[in-house]
Length: 88
Image (cartoon, rainbow, N blue to C red):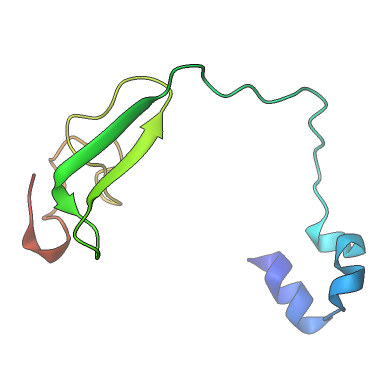
């Protein structure tokens, strides 16, 4: 957030944006990032997005029992009621 505020205070052109110091990465990773070879696809038919399609995502490991939400990030289904009054 602070980087965006700095840009608002000192805007620069897109042609110079790669040199904007607040937006520079502080840490460079010199090793390639290896995604997991066999991700699990977690799909939750009872929890639908605005298009009516099931929410789904991929994880490197096992899927949570229920769809994770902001107040229930690990999918325990113990948090407050889900958006739109739906529970899984």
